[in-house]
Image 1 (tube, rainbow, N blue to C red):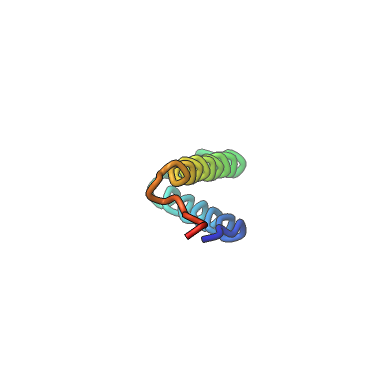
Image 2: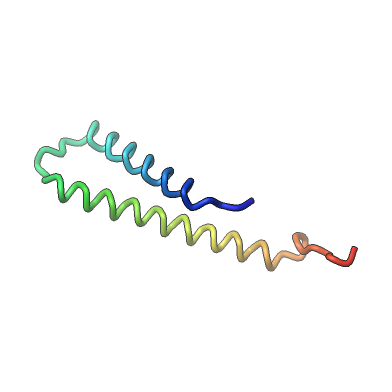
Length: 75
């Protein structure tokens, strides 16, 4: 399965908005400026993307070393 970059980007944007909405619902954010909230949201979203990339790399490298998943191209 091929991963599409646009799907990941739009998914990350939607997760960011949903997270910001939920945090704003449960926590009083009136003491923070809009710039601080935006910076924290972008940093959290970037962290989630990096974590997802690391997990994908680990899973992908694990598939390559497993002999059960090796393909015999001569058969």
